[in-house]
Image 1 (tube, chains in turn orange, yellow):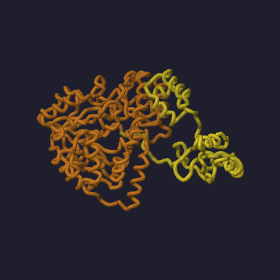
Image 2 (image 1 turned 90 degrees about the vertical axis):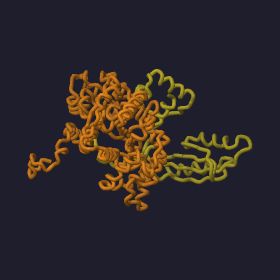
Image 3 (image 1 turned 30 degrees about the vertical axis):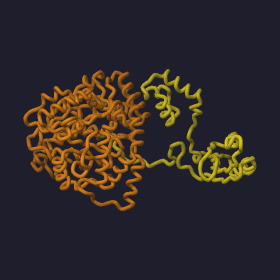
Length: 392
Length: 160
């Protein structure tokens, strides 16, 4: 990117883009991706291939020439199926015609939403450690990211008292991601209810990124959108990437109040036009016939989680047993290394890739993210190697 | 727990008891006990490798054979099925619905050997009224495993 024709100090690039936080993790990622023979616990996507019946359905759609645009909102048949699915699994009812939009991943959904609701200077509250795009996404939409840390002592659930302290007259929305990437945290129902009450009391919106919600291993996932008084102020973001192992298809959706979905649709129609039709057809098949395969993958994640949590704790890298997503977030301070040093040295000495916790926010320092979206053999081998690494 | 252990063994019967115990969040003694019980109760009938014979030099011929039988007044299909099942050449045997009664998978070292088994052993058993032999030409999938190696493609090794 250092093209000499473009001297670095000119103001060709917009100020709010120049000002985006540079991800310190890029160098580390490039190092890993250039290496051979890496056992990776660093991948934020399922290791499973998309189930064949879904791939087969998208091939069939291609064979039949389904390669056109769709409605800006997405195929109506898909939106109907989505709203049926959301109603029966999350207990919230949406109108497929006006309250649901199909997006290119939750990433696009979140971007549309932030652009739709933020006036310059509005504050969006989010919790860290979190997915890397939240703060930049808010800044790109001219909003001000306000971070609330979450802590190991709470199993990285959001403490409503901390949230309360972050609220100001400029607060526009709270962005929640549970089950959480990178911590695997979930919200106990009593805390979720308190968060909902705070949103109601202060009349602010809630953005619920629930992309990992099917991957809940014990108990039941409760969406904040289903709590009393929350439907009208919550935008529910969900998609197919994690539960159905469809990351590359890039299909997700947003459900919420008419005014906000309509505003999102406006931006979407002028920027993206519509999500790719082939992915939408694949998503339709996933919703209609995907449950068995999804459950099979979920059971495997659960078994792997049991192994990785036990092994990490045994070697002194303390972590709680997460109830959701496919990440564990062990505390590595007992190694005497920073999370960056830990990840870099582990990579160089044992060819095992994990992601330094600092990549997900300041309060992630002292932790690393281990994804158990890897085969059980690789997980066992990685654990053996980390144990060796710690003994040196 | 029992079902979880069986699910893991179905996928890979060579998993160590230690590994299984970790995956189901139990201890080695408990898992060993459950597996032993399953073996004693004949729920688990055995453990076998899934082998791609096309990669071996020794030849093996396999055939699927459809068998029509005249069920007996006493014993129905079972007596004849048991007689057939005892032949070492018979790998598997099922009573099936549809156009015929029993389906066998038979193996031998040559075409002649399998053909000989069908004509001299199988077809001559009292109650067997007709057979149809289908030699297996190529195996695409067995025991849930694909027999063609897919091409590798570029996947990220790390992503947020």
